[in-house]
Image 1 (cartoon, rainbow, N blue to C red):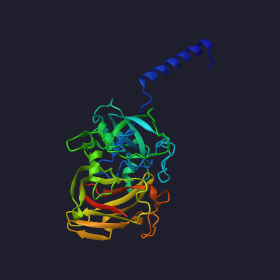
Image 2: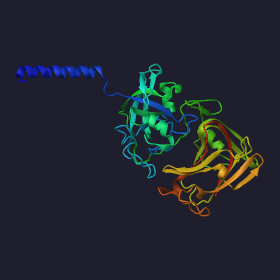
Image 3: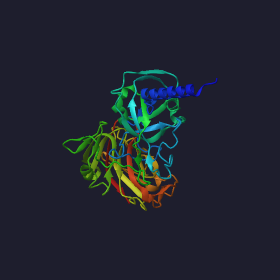
Length: 386
């Protein structure tokens, strides 16, 4: 169709006006999606040690425990951890961390199987935003959790698995899944080097009660640094710091042989986690410790694992340790450090490595973990390395 120059100019002006009106009516930066949650008490999936390689997350640094796992089927998943996605076994090397602004969206939505869900009245405040950092992935294909991952992580929505602590700021946990809106935040976290390690320094973000226990927003307790030093004195390894997580309370007790003991009521998949200096285990051969019997008079159903800021050694079930010595209500367990080696080194040899990506010098974490979703009382004493 032939148009005069005057008509063409008029059409261009009208088109420009229409585009300006559209931009005024629509907030283009917000992306509609969906969010589930993970990492709370009783959940086997922890927010720590995610696929981005940040390992244990410090609640007082960066975005703390306001973190998320992004579905790997969404279009911009690549690079969501920062420049070095999936480098967990080579050590973290990214220079920035991707962050998103997230808010609850009152809406109807569906799961990956087409089931409709009404979430129009579940948001605490649809205008409230929380900044989260991507620390993990939600894989569409995950055989050991096939149904759930196919339900949420296969790209039908722009899906986040939010940390339990973030999710509770937006809606009640009972809903399980909510509609969300998000956009990539301008608050990218500068890594400032190539270290992705974030350890809990014990300061927490809750209120301190009279006995020095920090009551966090998640209902668990974390001891302040001063109290931690006391808990690890005496029969415990000098210079090691308590980084325990997901527990309701801790207390001192009389351990095996009358030494100091340290007890905790661990929530589901919670752990007593201790951090030492690098090189603490290098060249040593043996780890021994005493644990209090469970209610059935048996070794507690828990695991012990060594780790570093570059990855984890093999996890060992306490009940599989055969070198035992029963002492009243306690049992002393002894395990060669090379038992934790993925490479199956000679158990009688000094500990020099447990992984191809790092050496024994890097290993400075000892974790005693509740295997199950229910609470478990766990008492520890006489921790020694030689």
